[in-house]
Image 1 (spheres, protein in one colour):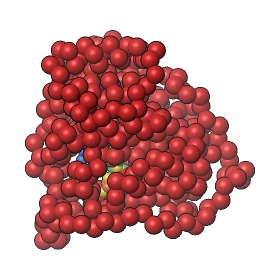
Image 2 (image 1 turned 180 degrees about the vertical axis):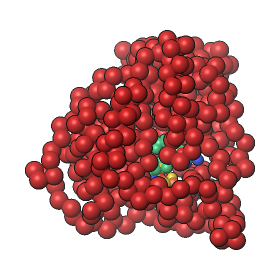
Image 3 (image 1 turned 180 degrees about the horizontal axis):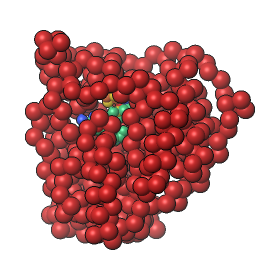
Image 4 (image 1 turned 135 degrees about the horizontal axis):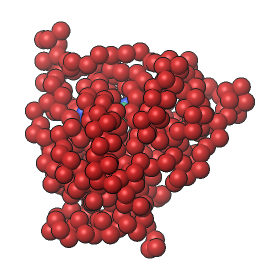
Length: 364
Ligand code: SAM
Ligand code: DTB
Ligand code: SF4
């Protein structure tokens, strides 16, 4: 097996993305078969453990408090509630639970302690545990690792250039720093992005440069199609075409051969034929459950019917990497440092974010 290439240039990636489709599909499917079983797809269940009320201004996100969207917010769930949902996910064929919180960054204290307990609880159910909690420090990453976290999701979301057109409350470098903090532990990195936000192909390629030149590359890369939610700055974006999704998945597969490429948000807008093409192009993971974090997702039974139709099998947990050990809170070698990290706040003006915020003020 050839060594993974870590010096992809933007032009090389654009050239792959723009290949005649049949060639692109053939190349991606060939790469996929060299590194993965093409009939196995990972099933991960998303769980929004803390919903809405987020202080950030991410232009795509229905959970940003400053926009007027129709979501129901919730405080942090209890460990028991999370355990019950994880058991349900396990019985419906999921091997991983991904817990999402509408936070800018993790703050040391009771709520983080509760999340650590959720991680311990799910790892003891022999499922892979993933969290996406915003920016984290090295000490926080180490505490998550000690609790038994398998993966941390922190998306770059777009190219560094286009990121500035979407978010003004934090910088791209904060995302890279968080990923770097995760890399100081045994926790695997899950990082990807969104297409359909009005970005150019150059931005999609730019994001793939940023991800593929990480060494090691992320163990999983979610590719989300924007779910345009009413009230967000990106509410009027046209749905991304399936051809763009297939090209993005195929290009991701070619430049990151070993990663699990996850077909993420936006599957409700895709036909089974479209999704089959994405699996052929190298996608080998999905988010399952009738809800993503706040928006709809295909029903689990529908997904299992699709798997049957396509001859796909759900991936078993811990086949890529050993199950981490869980250290109990009382035996922890790390402490709550009460850190107050200075994550950046560029605060430049993004017109469409401002407009959505003004509209929200009028609506409230
Ligand atoms: N607050 C944390 C953060 O931003 O890192 C974790 C949760 S956040 C909702 C996780 C990811 O969801 C974002 O990075 C983005 O890629 C994705 N996401 C959010 N809203 C989306 C939308 N409307 N369509 C597609 N993906 C979306
Ligand atoms: C990821 O890349 N996509 C997921 C997960 N990581 C956390 C989230 C998708 C959210 C879609 C919008 C919503 O449901 O709120
Ligand atoms: Fe908050 Fe994350 Fe949504 Fe941004 S993407 S508004 S940080 S929940």
